[in-house]
Image 1 (cartoon, one colour):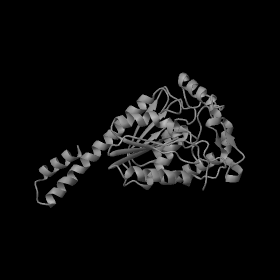
Image 2 (cartoon, rainbow, N blue to C red; image 1 turned 180 degrees about the horizontal axis):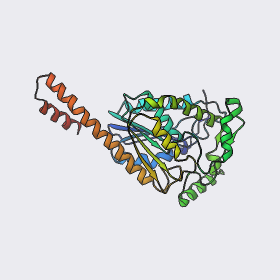
Image 3 (cartoon, rainbow, N blue to C red; image 1 turned 60 degrees about the vertical axis):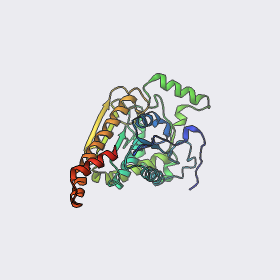
Image 4 (cartoon, rainbow, N blue to C red; image 1 turned 90 degrees about the vertical axis):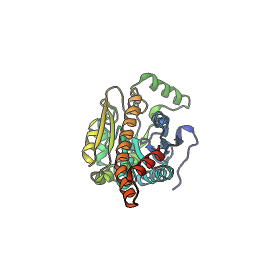
Length: 306
């Protein structure tokens, strides 16, 4: 499938850090990897390898003919995961909004190869306070051809509560003769495919037993808090969550972005510590099988990992 590619830096994926633990982060529906840059930088400074791919068809401006399907987006997430996994011993996956749903799909399919999931402002149905009530009529759309008749443009505050940051973004895009509403506009087909993705993930989420971190704003303008609560009930694994009280939807950029970085790091490090503790008995058993003092081998193993 050939789709329009945009060479702008706004629409480019990126990689940061080179640690042995990797974090794959997936951008939102109609968004770009740049919305994850601040979080990625925080994780990279802490010693993690972070990959933020650009998903053709799901990134704004890359599917002007509305040809892509959610399976195309997911295939790119799988490709990025395999690339990151090739250079890491441990991998976490996560995303913002719709990106967290793609990450959850990957986690359901790769539970034996993923350590944990980061779900940031997860969205199962767009129902924040800035979403027009008429959007609920889209539930009646059951075919792609019918969905082509719709187009959704975002309206203020565009997922950003910080007025200074929002003005900076508006000014940046105004110089390109575009409004934020146009930049983050979504075709009806894109929304239709996203809802199909959600349906597919709902059927599998009950088997997902990996630890998950959920961060969601109480005043989300795009995705009501009940999305996070529903997601927690869907999965079978342990869930660590935080409710943000001073952010809108794009929590990786908004006023509490530092909280998102801090709590994400705490979750990753906690899971890493638990995995390390689980590995120690296995190393000890292996040492005993070889007839050597288990303590000596465990000490050597830990030293080499450090």
